[in-house]
Length: 111
Image (cartoon, rainbow, N blue to C red):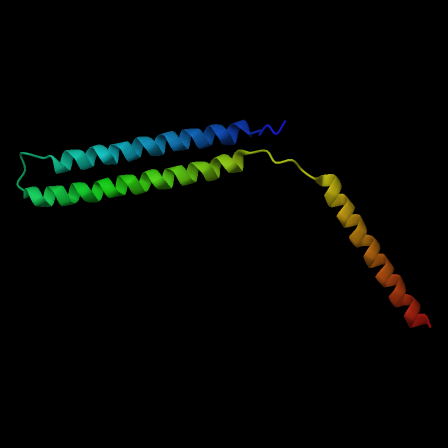
């Protein structure tokens, strides 16, 4: 009964964007592993571990960002029910109030 409907174009774009972001996050994680486990380098092993750790933190941060962005994009893809009948009723009542206020003001000016 409470089935959520999506705009298929936006939903597809959200999934594609999330997939690409996850590939980038995995690549950053791969770079972190390769840098931290480098054997044949002129840098010190400690420096390699530090740089690898920074890349790993960046990868985790990018994964968190990607998840949040995916949820926002997916929420934007939902088709929301328009309550146009309710909006029209509220607008009609507001217009009637304005008319009654204007007619009261014009009657007080004539008296």
